[in-house]
Image (cartoon, rainbow, N blue to C red; front, side, top):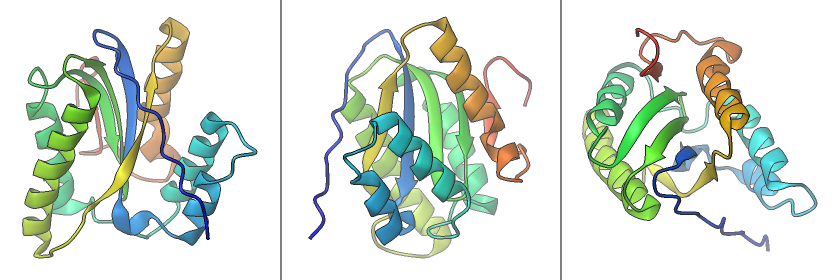
Length: 174
C-alpha cells in the first residue's frame, strides 16, 4: 500500500505564492509514485509531476469552453481572494502566481469548489473534478519570482500549446 504524503501548506499574507492544482482524473498510479518518492526533494518531485502532467491526456478537461470559463473565473477572483500576477491553464492542471490576501486554504477551497461546480455543468458531468491536494510555494525573493513567472509563461509553449486563453499576466497584454 502506498503512503500518501500530505504537503504542508504555508500561509504568507502579503507575500507571493506559486500554486499548482490538478484535475483528479490526471492522478494515476505513476503520478502517485512520483509524489510519494521520499528520496527526492519536494521541488524535484513537483518538477517531475508537472513534466508528466504536461504530456498526459489523463483528466484533460481544461480546453475550449472550460478553458475560457476558467480563464475568466481566475481573473474575476482577483482582489477578492488574491492579487493575481499570472497563471497558465494546462489541459489537466493550473499554475497560479499571486499575492496572498486571504488564508490559502480558504482561497483554494473557494477556487476549487466553485469552479468544479461550473466546469462540471459545462461538461455535463458529475463527480470530483479537482484532486484534493495542491502544491504551494512561498516566493522568497525577486530571483525566485522571476523563475516562477518565466516557468508559468513558458509552460504552455514548452508543451506545444498556444498561449491564447491559457496564459494571463497583469504585466503583459493578453
